[in-house]
Image (cartoon, rainbow, N blue to C red):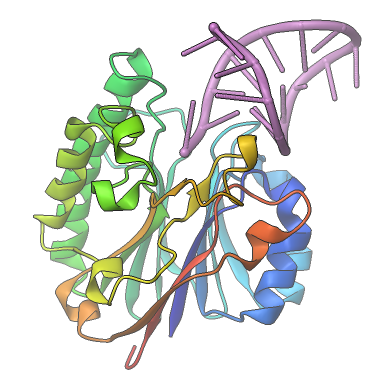
Length: 256
DNA sequence: ATGGCGCGCGCAGCGCGA
């Protein structure tokens, strides 16, 4: 089994890239973020023609998440239970007995802003939710754009980013609190690849200059961790015309 | 130097992302 996460930064703008990528990489399931699209505009027929079912939680202009799967999507849930939020950032489904929770964590804008406070509140609520999911589903995979670079090694220029949003200590502590539930950052399960970033700014040729961050993650429960086989950050789509600023990240399993 | 680039919205230029 293979599970991918990809922030497409507008599904309408990236539909061609997504379909081409799925044709070349027929993963079992993929969590998408930043659809920026209402449910009724989702290209369901084109996705189904590729052999995928879709569970979606869309929103006009901002946010929006989906899980696509080549297998049945069961027990689909949206949002964080008990956390009032207009923004569509969470969708969960069970695929072949594996619970997948797919996230688009708030960006946080700037330290001290209302959006930053919302991000930290959101991550606190997420921790409660994932604790419950972990208790219910021993086979748990959490995919998403977490908007947190967990350590300085995940930042091209740690000094320039020190204390900035995505790298601040409260954000990193909130990320570690997810791991303390018993989840593992699957990236750390393998020898660090030469290229470890998953996002590069569109400006200033950041991708070409290797100025990126690792902010897209796949967390796994202990039962899933045992089955992990490989982890891959695919930079090919980032080279295309009008790319998403994020790359797809794929975790492969032996047994699941 | 507070923008750069790319998106949606909507038809000009702004809000937002990371």
